[in-house]
Amino acid sequence: MTVLHAKDIERIACAMEENGEKFYRAWAAKTADSNINKILLELADEEKKHMETFRTFFSDISPLSVIEEEAGAYMNFFNSYTENLVFKTSAAEIPEDRLRISVSVLEYAVAKEYDSIAYYNEIKNFVRADNQHIISRVIDEERTHIVKLVDIIQTL
Image (cartoon, rainbow, N blue to C red; front, top):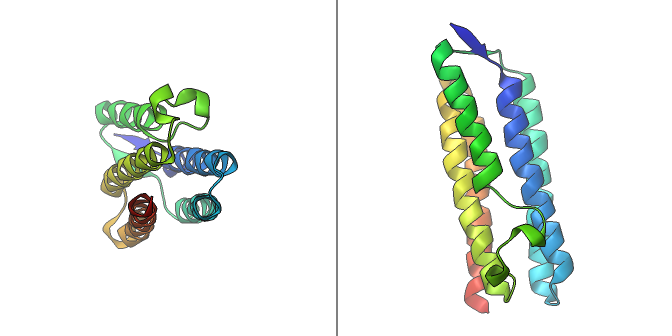
């Protein structure tokens, strides 16, 4: 048996949140709509808070044991998630058709928030049952991001 360190999961989770923060700040700077700008900056601040939540949480838990053959597969899954499915941080990395209107950017953000929720649900599999409520709290916060984004989309 090998050990999957909490620091590995923390690193990936924090990278996701950091990318989300950068994404929201970059798009807030690009929008001319003050209401959208305000909400995107709020979401960026919340992503930053998530990073601190994870740093605190993962500093308090012990290494997690997994079967050696599975450790590599899990880390590959987590790494591919952050590299391929989570927020792209610069406008150049977002397909050109996504840049044309605010609605497309917001819809892209909604999809990435759903991806984040799926990722955090996977992380819960590596956390002791008595600590899963912390990950659940972050998932709930990601859901509030989706609600805020959808509310904006419906007003456009």
